[in-house]
Amino acid sequence: MNILAQCCGIVIMGIILFFFLTQKKLKLHTTHAFIAIWAIVFCALIFDILSIIAIQNRQYLPDLLVIFICKIYLWTIISESLVALWYVCVDISNSKKNERNWIFRTSVTSSVSAVIIAFLPIHIYSKDGVVYTYGSSVIATYIVAILNLAVIFYMVYKYKRQMNPRRRIGVIAWLIIWCIAAATQFLNNRLLVVGFASVLGILVTYLILENPVSNIDADTGFFNLNALFIYMRELQGRGKNVSILCVRYDNNRNNAFSFETENNISKEVVAFISAIKEAITFRSSASEYIMVFNERDEAEAAIDCIQDRFDKPWGNDKFRMLHLELYFMVSTEKIRRANDILSIFQCAKQDRAKFHTSDVMVIDNYVINRIYEEKNTETMIIEALNEDRVEVFYQPIYSTGRKRFTTAEALVRIRARDGEIIPPGKFIGVAEKSGLIIRLGEYVFENVCKLLVAQDLKKLGIEYVEINLSVIQCAYENLAVDFIRLMEKYNVDPGSIVLEITESASIAEKAILLENMNRLRKVGVRFALDDFGTGQCNLNYIVEMPVDIVKFDSVMTKAYFKNGKGKLVMDAAMGMIHKLNLEIVSEGIEEKKQFERLDDLGIDYIQGYYFSKPKEQDDFINFIKENNQA
Image 1 (tube, rainbow, N blue to C red):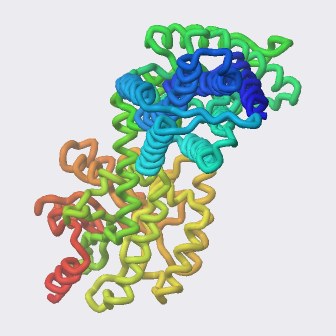
Image 2: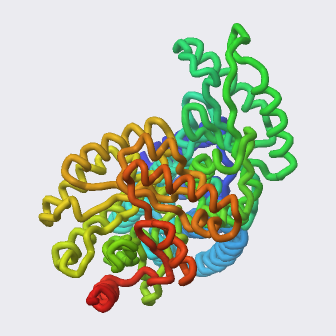
Image 3: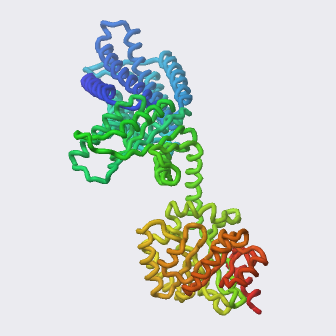
């Protein structure tokens, strides 16, 4: 009966080996360890069978040979636990050096165990068809194996975050099966189930972890993203840098392909990419592939080949053109985590329009570092919002007609954990790119509402507060709804708020902005056109948009004092704006003579460091009280 169980185990092991060897797979360190485990378990099965046969026929065999075979079987049991420990530790570190260390440790420990087993006595029980071994040699085997298993459990628990989650589950399942079998056999020596339990453990490990099919994309035959992360994690463990090419394509003419045509083209693309043998290819989406090259030269040659092919038509009719985008990560030297690769490619796609016009965007170490900096800044913004470290500063604005400060601009700041103020130039761009500007903008708006409620600013002479909106906020469909909700929540007079807008980037964004402006203007909110004179805002925009105030940018203001052309442009703009019954704010005034000149010129409001830098809320209130008393 026991031999039949072990024979069934051998058959299962053969099936596992057949599928493992005949299917496409990545060459990983854990793959080597799995082969070692398979080999030692297979040997254990063979010697389990041989020991049973030898015991049953010991009257025909030399006693020394029977004992030798039985002790070899015990040694294979210890070796199983040692190789399993090697398998776990290699997965934790993914280091080639670590793998060599564990091979050495396993070899030494196995040799020591073999010596111990060789010198300890072993006894044989054979009666009524039941055979088994016992004695101090067997007990020592169990003790060493149990100690190894305990170490494995400890390593799995201690380094659970560093292990592949699937591998952790598979190893634990294997250990549980083996422990139950070992306990059963220890309590009842007649049940020789440890060998078959080891086979079940190998089967679980194969199905959950080492089954090559789990890493293959069924549609293309390429590796999938899970395989990419596993592979890159191992390369990082080895300290090996590679070049990565992200190939992305779509229909260049925006024509809808039929399902059959699209399917044929996809197959044609897959066949073409498959022919590039220098790369290990992974599929990341329906029309996007990630190709990993050992050498940069190989990647650059592949780029030329891919570009040349995509310049030609596709499909059975050779009439379909595809739009190609290539993202070339020159080296993975600066990649911190394997999972960062897709995020970096995604960020590169967002930046493509800004920095590249060709179909190849090179992602070098500078680009990678910049993307990491942006991600760090994004994290910093989120933490500041969650920890209430976002603050609103206020810069007073002087009215030339009333000769006092009648308004102020609200400006967002972030306070670092050490108390230092982080200027907006370091985070606004990232906030706009990530969409966090919506949360920041709402935070600023709500804090202005709180200030208007907590302080009777009109008694201090402040008629309204200006709040700057980014282009992203202007294109946010729920902007008006959110702002009206906050004004109602704090019972704020909408007339005490002016929103500053800049020229929107597209017709679609302008339509959304106009809808928001109309809804907010109906409740009494007014608008100012910011950054006039930077090239972003022009005279047509003033005519088109329902604004009440125009703000001259500091660049335009300074140009007025530097050359005659600047003076002529500003004079003409002022004349037109005043004829439209709009008020003018001039920003960037830093000197007394600038202020006096603009005051004589008829500018309605002056803003700049000549009067005050942006101040914290309490300092702003004190400043207004001191300067508006007269």
